[in-house]
Each structure stands twice: as C-alpha cells, then as structure tokens.
Length: 500
Image 1 (cartoon, rainbow, N blue to C red):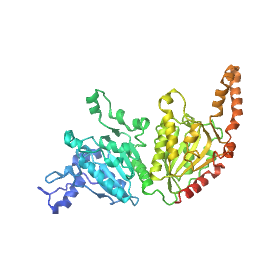
Image 2 (cartoon, rainbow, N blue to C red):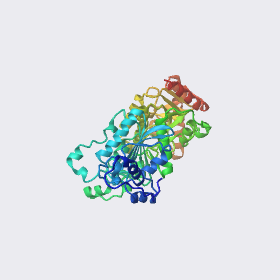
Image 3 (cartoon, rainbow, N blue to C red):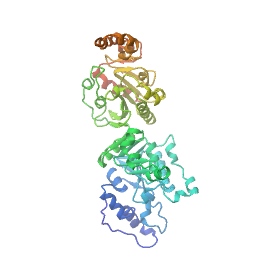
Image 4 (spheres, one colour):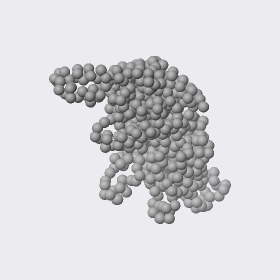
C-alpha cells in the first residue's frame, strides 16, 4: 500500500518520453486524486490497486492500459479511465484482471474502459486464463453517453455472450450500476460483499422515472439479491472472506485437476439418519466426500431444498448437487430446479464431473408452485441433466420418488453410474402419500384415534413396492452399495470416467 504522504509529481507541461517513469509512478500512487484515495482507505476500503497488490502473487501484476483516457495535456487523475486492467499470477497461475477504479470519475462506464476490459478477455482467451472482474461503477458516464452517436456505438460487452469466452468470476464490492452489473449478471460465479449494491440503474434514476423511492440496499443489496434472484452465488462479510472465496473460485478454473488434496475422515453412517423422515444437513455428506476445505457452496440463500456448489475430490474439481432434507424435506421447488440446472450448465461448460446425492420425496406440490412454473422448471431440469456431457455419479441415500428420480440424474437421464444405499426407496410416490391417495376415504372414515395407525399400516403395505432391491433387479439403478464404500466408489468411478 502506498503511503498517503507520498508527494511524487510529474514535471509541468506535456509529458515527454523521459518523464513516463515519473508519470507512471504518480498514476500508481495518486490514482484519481490523493483525497479520493485517502477517503476510501479511511472508510476501511481498498482501492483497486490495493486489492490487486493484496490479492495476487507479489509483484506479478502486469498493467495494460495505464494511460487510457490520458491524452496529451490531460491530468494524471484521469489515467485508466476508471478501470485497472492487465494480468497477474494467483498461486503461480495466470489470471486476467479487470478492476473498477472508483477514484477516477466513479468508474463510470465508457466505450474506452469497455475496450480495456475486452482486451483483457481477448488475452485471457488466448492464454487459457480465467478473468477476475471486480466491479463498482456509478453507471454510464454523463453527459457523454447522452449523445445518440456515442450511445448507439457502444455495444454491451459482446464478449459476454460469446459461447467460448473464458471463465469469468465477478465480485461486486460497492455500488454497481450499468456496465459492472452486466458483467456480474452473466459471470460464471458472482460474489458480493455485504453493503454492496447490484442493479441496472440507481435509485435516483428510478425515483425520477417512476416516482418510486427505494434505498440502494432494498433495491439491490447483497442479501436481498441472494435470497430473491439468481444473480449472486456467494455473499461475504469482509475483505478477508472475499479474498478467500475468490481464490477458491478462480482456483477451480486455473487448476481443474490439482495434486491430491487432503482427504476427509468423516463417517457417512453418522451423517444420515436411518429413519427417512428425520431431517439432516446434506452438507455433512458433502464434507465427508470432498477434499478438506475445498467446497464452495453456490446459491445457499435460495432454493434451499437443494445444495449446489463446486469442490474437489482427490484434487479434481467436481460439481456437487445434493438434496437438502433440512428444508422442505428435500422436495424440489421451481427455484431449486433452476439452481440445480445452473450448476449442471456450469459444470458442462467447463468439463467438471458431477456427484449427485439424492434424498428427495419428489417435487413440491400445491397451487403456489404450479403457478410458479413447477412443470416447466421440473422438465427443464430433466432436460438439462439428460443432455449433460460430463461424467456423473449419482448416489441415492434414502429415497428418490416421482419425477425427481429422473431429474436427479437417473440412469436414463444423465447418470453414468447410479448407486443406492441399502434400504433406499425408489418409486412413483412416497408410500405415505400413496396411502393417503389410495385409502384417503377409508382413513377419513375411521375413528380419529385409529387414523394414524391405519395410515401407517397402509403405507407399510405399499413400502415394499419401492424397495431398492426390486429396482436393482430391473436395472433401474446400477448397484446397491454399502455406505462405507460410497467415497471409494465415487473416487474410483471418477478416475475411470475422467481418464480421457
């Protein structure tokens, strides 16, 4: 970090070639002005250059576009046009770097700083690097963008829509409107810090256009977006946690197959209760499968009946998708379906194999989910998973009922190897639900004290029809396995399916 009292300055008048070293030093130290730099630091925030210096390997950042926006006679405080760009090393691996610099014109969006970003993406594509975009922009630069000829000639980051673009990890660390929001919305993994804001336009514009008064936090605060939209994958509380999460996320792309990580020593038998009606946290199962400390959960605040994320098994990056009995008994909601499909698309795009852990009573039912598009979301998930090209290992822990069996990588819908634990149940409908459907009138007519017992009796009679042994006998699954063999079989299967 550069000291605030550094008084380096450039010679007066036009910058000569022999002055470039001094000019560069001033740009790096003063950025958009000493007072703006000082204000950020006093607020406990890092400048764009502070972030780069702290996050990447020492002295590895190579800047590109230092003098963008600084034509002859322009002050050094406009250099970079509100964006710091280049490439750096993270753990020895190259990463494209795009960081908004709010000390320069509040990092407002222009065709020039969009070009800076595009040049980094082109370089990353050429060199097989992921791109880190750290955003906080005040929207389009006014009044320049008000001109029709300027506005019409600024495409919206065309590289974002290219199917072969490099991996993009985005972090929103302040108030973000316009260009930085567009990148975050389409990034492969998006992280937000608490207190940051992500929206298309600002509350002031909204108030002017609609008369609606809204605070930045209510409009696009991290917690609001994480719970109500799919724009945010991870919310972090401070810079330390931000750096940890970004390092983990970028590592999935810089080193998809690393040397073997530390293996967990958890006992799966202690993670999952035998009673199919007792809830538990599937994250315990995930932690017992993946390398220690490697799992990054994505979208934890929404669609909570399913857990999705990326982790490593023996150093290899894998996607993890697991039913979450802690929420809605693990029944899939429309939002949970969207969340699961997003994870599959991410893995399919970057050739990450998937491990799917199934313990679900099926899809949610009711008027509210039907009106929320349950049918379309359910079938879209079946379609996305069926079309997945990456290797998939499915493990049915306790139950898989209804269409959810097919949606969660069954043998004919994307599951390359489908395993089940002894005692698992697989069928059209959970026995208790089926008993209510088939014998509802009989149960309702029974004395009140007898109804529960009668329901249990009828359900028990139907329970045998969902026995995993019968499903295996018809090759509806590939194998019944002992619980203790789960992790070794997953590892072995991934080794063989991913050997090419």
